[in-house]
Image (cartoon, rainbow, N blue to C red; front, side, top):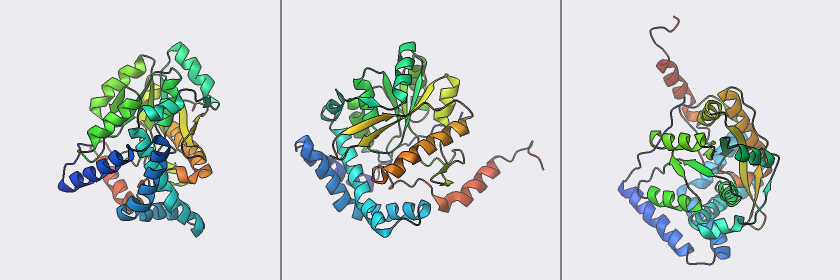
Length: 315
């Protein structure tokens, strides 16, 4: 099984300053009514934080890498719209009950709904796959509201000051939550074996991941979710929270289950599924991520090749 990575959490002076800044912004935003809080948080991140944090450069670089023919007007729109969605997502997660209350009567859509209900009734484990799209915690909130037993695997924040607050925030949306790494793997497996559902964010660059593609470019991807699904005969269903035009509500889409195959085949299907949706709603995916890292491709392949050389390797 592929190794789960985890972050020890840095605590440098710069991390402390960043944490205090984020906490101040969140604290001020939480004083506002929810319907104002969310768009204002989006505006602050896109207009004030993004230029300083270099988000515009990151978005432009990623788009140039995978979609070099995208019109400049669309690139400029996404440079503003992507951080706006990120800011809204951050404050929604911190809003706890005010966020989850919006899903108390929300309906689930898509061909995967019936399969999820069947798995739930049969107590069959379910691996839920999503990405940093729309609000990635919207599907979890909606499924929990609908009566499903949903846990989530999360990646610990690099900022050691910020991480405990992040974990507390996502825990308010629903529990259990498990940190990516050895520490969380035992709890996650127990949850799945008990017939639970576990959500995975599968659109991160993973150094030791499989050599798969996203938007037609090499994008090392963890195959751990597929391996777990195969080991415990879990249903694999992509789920997404698509932000509505009003910027506050969501359509929760449950796609058709991904058939079992090799871990690489299944994970590539996950990447392809997400790509289709991102192309339909470009501003809702987190183009700020360093998803491809083409500058590391040569050293990554050289390092991996050297690691695979052993006494039994063919000469």
